[in-house]
Every structure is written in structure tokens, then in C-alpha cells.
Image 1 (tube, rainbow, N blue to C red):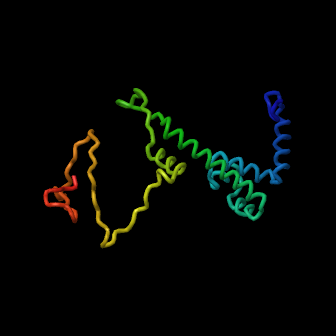
Image 2: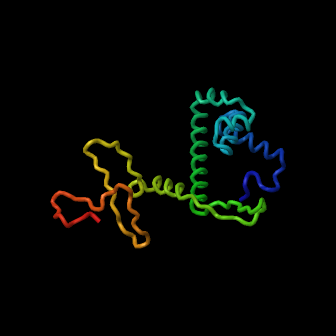
Image 3: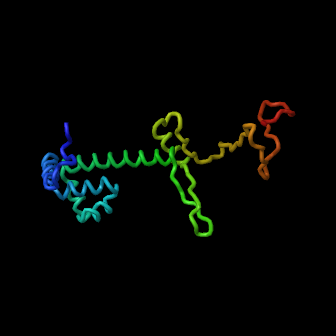
Length: 176
């Protein structure tokens, strides 16, 4: 089975196919053009400029339930594309040029740990949810706990007491 627009399709046939798809959606050709541009750029202002349609027209079209349905689908597809790009950058990284004396000498692959953390949180919030910062009250106690990982030396913080005493602990016991 061949697709609607394969390599043997003449350009005028492609226009007919595009027109048929417009008829199936129930949208005007302007609306379809705007939504195609939106899918490419993910921004109402940029889609308006790219399609040559004033951005205010989009907001007028938002009064139509069918257009809202199609625009919501376009937003969903754009969000999926953004997530895929974030995943690619987090896992595969991006190549950044390395210059010496204004001459390109190579590339370095840079990964995004922050994108990876956001993807983990979004896909498994029970496990990777970052706790909300709570405002301090007089009952809150800030406690820095040192857990050795056998790879780093403990660096004392200026003004930090050497030992922390807890109620119920004997005098010689400390929190470290």
C-alpha cells in the first residue's frame, strides 16, 4: 500500500491532498496553515509570523470548538516533540565546538543533568519529586548531616560546631 503523497505524486496532486485534509478537519486553509506553522515553531507569535497570519486571528479562531480541538492537539504534539528533544539532550548530549586561538580544534559533548532530573521527576514523581521548600518557623531546625561516601573529604563549614548534641545522648556521643 502506498502513502497518499509518495515520490510519484505530482505537485498539483499534493495540493489536492492538502485540500482534502483541510476539508476533513473542517478548518479553513488559513487555520491549517497556522497550525502547521505552530507545529514547527511551538509559539503563537512565531507561527503567526511564519504563516503570514496576524496572531489576533488565532485568538478569534479560539471561539470555534473545532479549532480549539485541533489547536489542543497541536499543543500536545509540540509538547511531545519538546520532551523528545529534552530527552535527547539529556541522554545523548549536544556537541559544542572547542576553539583555540579562534580556530576550531574539536568538539565536546555536553549533557544536561538538569533536563534529566526534570524528565525523571515528570515520569516518576513518586520517586524523583523534589520536595517543596518550606518556610522556616521558630520550630524548624536546619541540620546538615554528613554522610561519607568514601570519595570526598569532609570540608568543615566556618562557624559550624564540631559536634551536635541531641537530647538523650551521653556527653561523649556526637552526630558524626
